[in-house]
Length: 278
Image 1 (tube, rainbow, N blue to C red):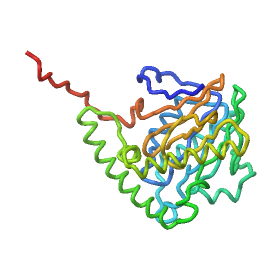
Image 2 (spheres, helix red, strand yellow):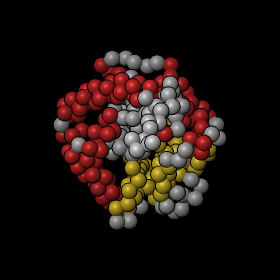
Image 3 (cartoon, rainbow, N blue to C red):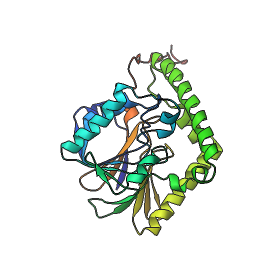
Image 4 (tube, rainbow, N blue to C red):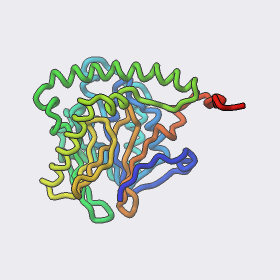
């Protein structure tokens, strides 16, 4: 029913069309946004319906300092063109673009703004689509701590940029320091686990089969006692998206494995001789 896609790059040469595309946490307006990689992805992936699952524009960062290069504008224009070509586009705001929650229920520029929405998949399963920040206790009850975490996150992204310059010279593919830390630090692992279980419970409360969210920048497709938890990940660290095939099957795409943009300048790795070689 669900699948995580990490095949070889040859599988991604031709543009692919899906029933539905889910992306979140682009954080346009920040230096960490992987806008070029996202444009590369959008040129090769189209869908009848596109869900923008929150934190598309980073209002927090834009309020403190304006940063909006042409590539970020190109992403917005690319999405608007998809709408003009007939794709349904649904924008579910998150905490970083919460200013748009005032417009929930309104259509503008071909984009439908909703606080949350239920998606009916082709196989009959129903998914609650929601950003997920409402279930983050830090964001809800300690906003100052969320801002502090955001500041630390920016530092981690800057370190990742420098690390990846070295990795490409050594022949390795793109790697995220912050994503690695989330997978290794016990408190982060526990936080992600609690978030996933809470969202699965919320799906049950809405009498749906699963939930599709973003917010924590940790892409996943997991089953909890018959309920499916899907997190689209982000386009800052991991560069991931979720697509629905025509039969309703959900697939998680890790674009960093295929992206020419993210791996530009990569030198083929030199194979070291075996220590047991003659």
